[in-house]
Length: 486
Image 1: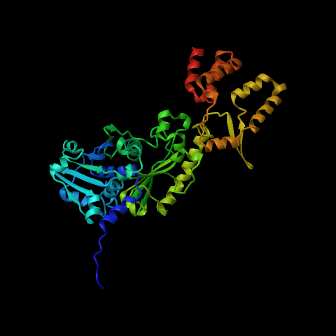
Image 2: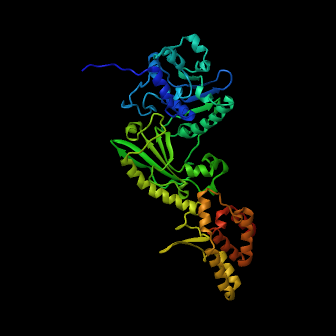
Image 3: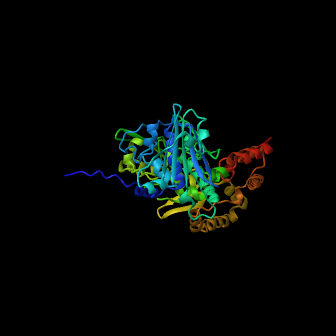
């Protein structure tokens, strides 16, 4: 038996790995991973689309030595089987090169550590011409000509990554400036979500400031922490001695969201598409908007989110890909998540069904009641609602049968099929009766008919606090109460 040393052919391999499927936003996120792993607290992304276009990434991390800079530019510089420190965001030792060269033909890395500057460059045109792995080592004069180098000098340590020659981004575009500007808007949206925990900061996590063309990127919290209901405590799952956690949330009903909150969640359509698991690796978002086939995406589950935190020590179980955009849970994790899914799905269903209030076992009297029968589910008007009782009392016994027939006509004419179609198409429901003016007018009308004395007014206001639609707007009823009782 004899051996043959058969290294890959540089031009073919480098051109081939450009087709791994990186989008611009995924490529940018991959580079930000390196900055975060390097302990950076400031990261600035700058892009320029005119004349000689470029994009650069500048951070104030700990930087690299000259040998480390060379190693960082090597394909497969670190094995995915190697044990990494807990904060390492890398995986295959390919991200810097494959992400960058998927977008450009010239990649330059300049780094500073202990006052020493080092620079390395891959130029695909030179590789194709020379047919070899030609890694260029830049001198100081060449470094100084690079965009962003003067800004790097302002840091004690840090790294500058420069992209040039955007052959793929510019292909087929009428205006590269307009195209790049639009794509960078998508990058901003992507970064604000994927790194939202770093942008916000949290216990045990260093806060990172990220800017694009000097404009800060603000975090997008997919869980609306502080506004959402946390229906379970953190659920720990231990695999091979390593701990991952799951934390379920139920978002507020859409009628209780502000315009900005709804927009941050992607609008009504975005809420439906983004329900499901949010998987974080070292608190960096990897995958979101999927139930991993444990539950189908449906309108009634659109408020459900589950935050799953995994350590990098379990990468081998999650089938993590090079782009860090795909992760599949192993069977042992799926079994644990399935139990969580059942509870959170039911919680989302209850919240969505009654405008953010639980449909049963609460202190609020609803206008409609949900009845579980042997034949299925039916909805009926609450006969114990004070307004129904007041009308029944007013019409008297001789018209009581007519009133009951009217109520049944309304119940039987409830357009359930049309409601279902509208809900699945993410229609936003609204009714005139829930405006402040109409709730006030309805309250005044009810009070004038059933309350004559101060004591009767007190009783009426007490039940208004517990029954729809008055309970939806307690501030309106509270103001009216002050006007009439003081």
